[in-house]
Image (cartoon, rainbow, N blue to C red; front, side):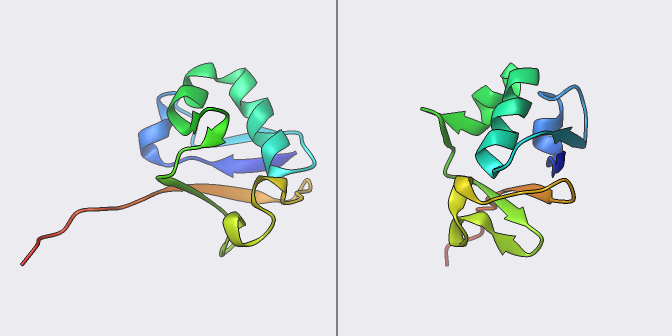
Length: 92
């Protein structure tokens, strides 16, 4: 099973878990299995069945967007990390 590491802001929607493991051959299948376990997490991460624009998923140091997106293959040793976008700052 692949493992997904959640940022603090999403853990309350996933039983306060930092990491969740789920079966799947692709990132999309892993996410689907996790969302079945934690429907509230799905509401936070997905819109219209697609990953919300302010979340990125990394496999190692690579953004899956630049691989095969949600169709990126995974295996039992894969660790995925959900990273929320960071915004803000000061306009000068």
